[in-house]
Image (cartoon, rainbow over all chains, first blue to last red; front, top):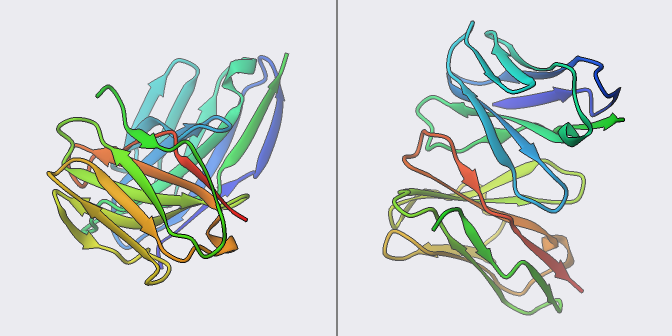
Length: 111
Length: 113
């Protein structure tokens, strides 16, 4: 069964304190791994897509990496506005495009 | 439009009533998805449309749930005889094709009392 597990569930950082969020997955052939950001009361906002092991993508203070079993979202020198829930999802090969989501990591960055 | 639009934003209904939730996808997007997010839960897939067809309905939790899409654009999710466990945020997403990144709407928060 295709599955996504994110850790930790919650993370508190001081402004400027870098850290990483983990997304472990099992899927019958990975088509793509997606990272989204979700603010309270809003829909998920697309951040990155990764397709193959070794791939990396960056956007401002965020960097996503992918291996054959997991993905990391690295946050460098975070700011309070980075506080949100970060969602990881996988799309299986041969699938209809359905995304299988993890439970998310809720990040709080204190000034 | 510029993004995925969902209406209403909030809906409170009495147990046993039927509700309709609407989704306007991004113009030109052929794929459309419905997900459900319950309190403290992850996003749960409900149904996928490619054009007006629904090749994957595997996530619909019961026969009280149905969805349609017309003109390759607007979609409606209908829940009949609502139950309290149907209370959740219903999210719609669209993508250019079925295997490209999906963009989400703001969701409809459904409360069944």
